[in-house]
Image 1 (cartoon, rainbow, N blue to C red):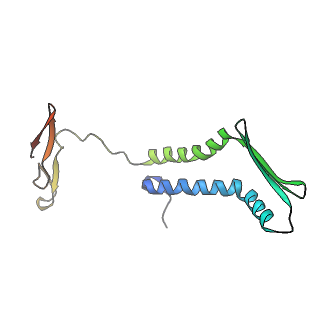
Image 2: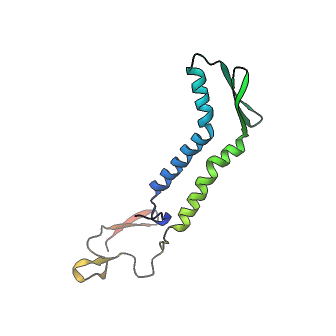
Image 3: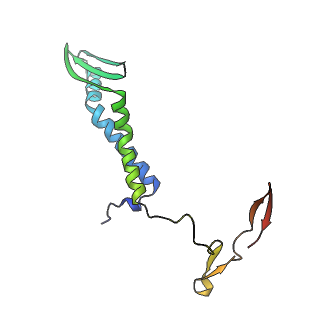
Length: 146
């Protein structure tokens, strides 16, 4: 059984989690009204209407059937934006903090050193397996080999 560990997630896992969240959010919020609209438009025995609008940053949707309101909902654009962005952002922060720390600056004297497997893993400065590096010098590049 595998455990749920954010530190083992790759960026693709994070993206898949976001997409799953957004899909679940859309289904949870718009699932019932979408079903009601589909039923209203596909059943010839039903009569009603759908009204949607955006007024002063308020989004509203109303589904009526036979003169009675069957579903009504409204919210602001800010609330929609927060529901859309805040949980994925919090998941990203948790994922970022759970990742192992990699030292961006290796200790002095280790740059360019590679392990030599034939020598039992000893560090060999400037292994011949590496390509030549270019170093900018006063606007031009100079090639140096290690």
